[in-house]
Structures are given as C-alpha cells and as structure tokens.
Image (cartoon, rainbow, N blue to C red; front, side):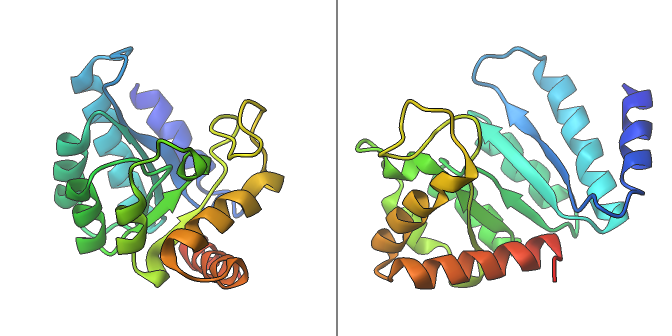
Length: 182
C-alpha cells in the first residue's frame, strides 16, 4: 500500500490534477476491512493537506468515523460528494467550511434530505453527476452523464426556493473556487 501512496504523490505533480480522491469510508458492503479503509483515508487526508489540494470524500454507513477523521485531519479543504448523509455529518462539514455536493438522487421521490439541501450555505453547495450511477429523473435507469446536471440543478433550486439559473451560476462559481479553476 505504501507504494500506491507514493504513486499518488507523484501523480499530483501533474498540473492538470486539481484534487485528491475520491476517497473515504464505505462500510455498506464491508468489501475492505474497516481499519484498512481508515488508514488509507487518513493517508489521503494527509496528502491533500500537505499538498494544499482539495479532497473529494465518499462516505456510506460510516458517518461517525468519517466525521471524526475530518475533524482530526487539520486544515484541509474538501467536499462530501454525493451527499446522502444526516445532519450530524452535515454539521461537521459545515463547521469545517467544507463543500457539500448533491447528485441525481435528490430528484427521486423517496429522497429524504430536502431539509439538509436547504441548510447548506450558498457558497458551499455543489452539484454533480456521480457517473455512471444515480441518473436524475427523468433519466433514471440510464447511465448518468454530465448532460443530466440540469435536472439535478433544477431539483436543488426548487428545494432552495431559487430559480435554476441562479442555482447553476452559484454551483459553477463554487466548483471553480473549490477546484481553483479560473
């Protein structure tokens, strides 16, 4: 595993790379031992902090450990990607001034995080595809792709009580800031 981290650090010397990840903890299927996941995630957080690069974090059924590790990581900029978590993890992210990104799942009828979408400050919200999965309605069941982002954007805008164009401008501005793209 140490060799893999060395290769990650090497790759980060390329100017087109703008972040570390996707990384994090996923306890849903337990395909990897949890301790090994935590060790790898901790190392990715260290690399992001040391390189002053943003980190893209995945978490599933691991909110307590993820939150604790984010708090312990020190100053690192990150995003909780494809956020479907609870207010507990959202609070951690917002306390740390992190971004929170939402994917097509927000368009599903059974989506229960509408209140959380509204809690994310305008300067911390992002949208994404999470390709190839979680295509938004009306594209559900298809392979997800960037051209479907307007459906996710429209759903987020409606939840937040703003028009889609305002939400698009907001999330584009935030993505540029997060990834340091001019």
